[in-house]
Length: 113
Length: 262
Image 1 (cartoon, rainbow over the protein chains, first blue to last red):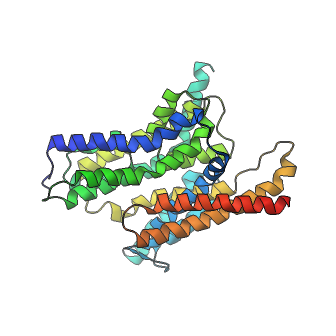
Image 2 (tube, chains in turn yellow, brown):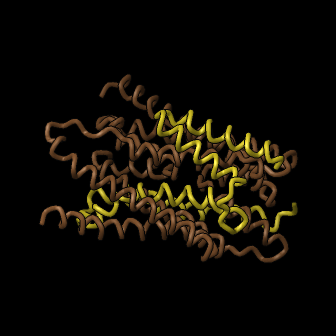
């Protein structure tokens, strides 16, 4: 557990990382109101949410140890399917998350993993 | 808006963050454990948590620091990776910006500081469902952001303090809370109540076409994100998949529109 970095190094590193993670987050919220984006860009941006959700979900659910796992043993896949089903039936996100986590733990317990 | 109204809106935003809080408490705990185990002190973990405030980036940084345990710390590589991992926020920030034009630049900067995948997703869903008030939008967003932020910090602290007691926090499956939430919100996007304006009836065909477009985009993005993750090492997949899918959507959108009107 020996730290490879001195305290000062770590703090400088954290400071730089802070700037680098702040800029992408704020740049448009800060400047876009005054910035007339071209119409095609605006239209494309409306599709960003539809694209970003599956891009976040599918790798997390499908990929195990660097390969696609489509088997019934993939507890995450099953849990995501249950979460999606519950989401269609009820709008409450909290219940959906809970259902997904319960499914995942049940599957893991069943498989003894 | 009077003070009570704003406090009420702030509270509504904080309540909307409930699923995020559930996810952050569990995955944030795992992040705290992993960061502490990489050799960072509790204070440094908390600095990362409060300043960097980016789940995947914090996991990646911990991994890079741990991997460099005896070598020179690859500062440039770490900074570049963090930048890359967080670059997708440009798209999220850009997507939200048109809905926050009435908010001052200073406030938008503060709101942007705490923008995450999860807060974006919840805020966007509220926008689509018309649950986000036009007035007090900044207060609502601040409530959402602050509950997410503090639950993340608290979970990081608990994880950092408990590190050593927990063998493998990630293997426990707690980190699944976030994919489950994304799945829920994705479904909500498609089941969002349609607008009830007088022209709504005439717009229904267009709405359906847009839904179909969104579905195609979602499928393309999913395939791309998985494919790129398998082919290209690093954290490129989410940014690239989103960028390509949204651009393709634009092309398809144009084709569909001209097909309808011609």
